[in-house]
Length: 156
Ligand code: FES
Ligand code: FES
Image (cartoon, rainbow, N blue to C red; front, side):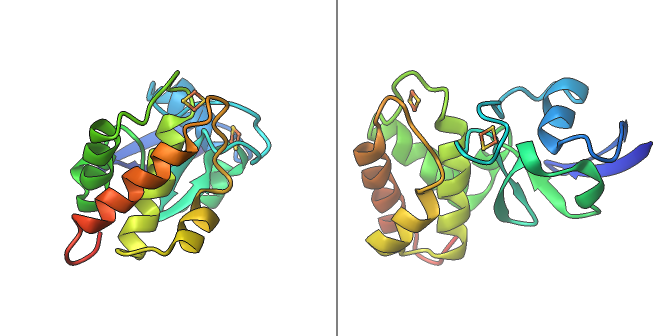
């Protein structure tokens, strides 16, 4: 079945079953492999992308549910104000260890900062709690989000 989706400002026609997860479409059909596969069950967060600006788990999001909402992935998050600030802070704080979880972490953090320019610790915890990092980079992630928030004057 044919679907037309908007990804990172571009329109793509894809011919897949309606229950195909968005993650599969991004990686296997469109070749955008920055978004990772982990659990496939909305438990780890590595597949996080933005749908209409909200952080969602693409592994459990069927393509037929996407509609005409704009999808943003790690490949383009640096072009957004919040995403650019988050990525700079990630580099400054040397957050990344093995890296596997990090695109999902950055997508969740960017969505948070875009909607809440100066998040509280509890808001950070709530926004990031679904993103697992086996390398334990949580302390640096929180520091980086706070740095990015301090550099955000008018929000995301
Ligand atoms: S792969 Fe989607 S949450 Fe783990
Ligand atoms: S940096 Fe290795 S899993 Fe998070």
